[in-house]
Every structure is written in C-alpha cells, then in structure tokens.
Length: 106
Image 1 (cartoon, rainbow, N blue to C red):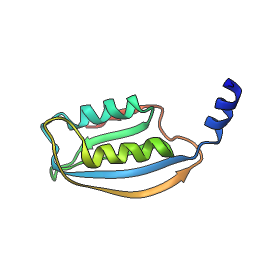
Image 2: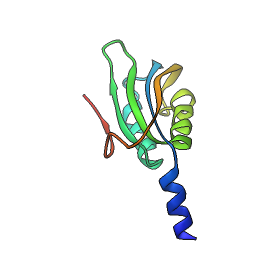
Image 3: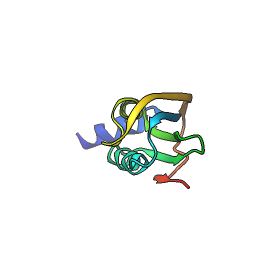
C-alpha cells in the first residue's frame, strides 16, 4: 500500500503559478497567513508586498494543492483582509520544484 502511494506521488503533476492579490491585503498579516497556508498544504514559493498596495508571489507544488491555494488566495486570505480580486499568470507544469520551502520576501 505504501509503495502505491509513493508511486502515485512520484507521478503527480507539479504546477507553478504566479499571483497578485488586490484589495486590502497589506497591513492585515496577509503574507504571514499565505506562508502558513502554503506550508500547511506542502507548497513552496514566496510572497511579498508590492509598492502599489498588492501582494504578489509564486506558488509551486502538486496540481491539486496549487489549485486549492489559488482558491484560498482568491476567496479567503487573512482574517482582516478584503480580497477584491486575484490575478494568476505564467501557470505551467514543471518537472521539479524550484524552491525548497515557502518564504516571505521583503
């Protein structure tokens, strides 16, 4: 049974996507919650504030988990945030992860 799970995990498609979240997403712990949510889901990548008041980043991992994170970024966020919209770009299948963990960039 364990061998079957390992083989399934090895053949799982990896996905990478860039994102930018608009709304009240700075000064509301959005980056901290994003980092926590990504780590909880076993995803890698990064998140940072932009000078125009948005939050941007990249997330990578198994396709299902990346899709779930996209939904979280679009609809949930941090408790005090107000998400107007989330834009996703450069969505692609990758052969290996480009990061070893998920981090907040400054």
